[in-house]
Amino acid sequence: MECHVYYEGDDDPEKCTARRLEKFDEAILYRNMDQVPYGVVLNPHAERALSPADAEAGLGTLVALDCSWESAEEAAFRMNGVHRALPFLVAANPVNYGRPFQLTTVEALAGACCIFGDRDRAEALLEPFRWGETFLTLNEEPLRRYADCVDSSEVVAVQEEYLADETEEGADHDPESNRDGQETPSG
Ligand SMILES: C[S@@+](CC[C@H](N)C(=O)[O-])C[C@H]1O[C@@H](n2cnc3c(N)ncnc32)[C@H](O)[C@@H]1O
Image (cartoon, rainbow, N blue to C red; front, top):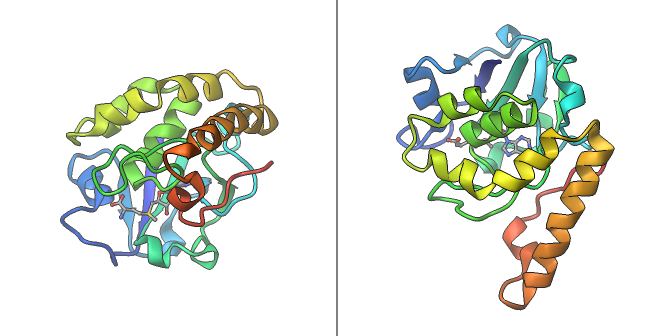
């Protein structure tokens, strides 16, 4: 699975996971959007959830946008390709630990690789990060279940179970407040 990232460069370069992926030759970064190849674009605003059915449509290419969450608005995702949102997965990075949907670039790419059945590639992507393995451990069950789905409607049905569990746990915390206004893929 090829990983390509449009790099906006407005986030803390010390913490930027895309730059670290580039350093370890795990992803190619672009400063010019016209150069970003066609593929499955990981877009949290997309209506349709990523599913194994998308693996072929993306021609073996994943694309992410690395920018701050403040600038990751819908209009920023102008890349050419099949736009998909990741279903419910929780972040393992220290900034957003435990928070659903708001993943770093490497977590998003690794999660997509797992859903496409390429666990080895996901492990290679996460290897340079101290918390990388934790992402796979925290999301072990949903990632396995999403990878077993046929299409996005099955993925959304599985996601609903995790969202319902979150709501039940809401006695301790409010999952809506933890989601920070993130949309959930519905199709
Ligand atoms: C907004 S950037 C933040 C990157 C962060 N600065 C870093 O160092 O990794 C994260 C990118 O990962 C992808 N991503 C994260 N969460 C996602 C989700 N729930 N669905 C689809 N893509 C997601 C998107 O391409 C998004 O633009």
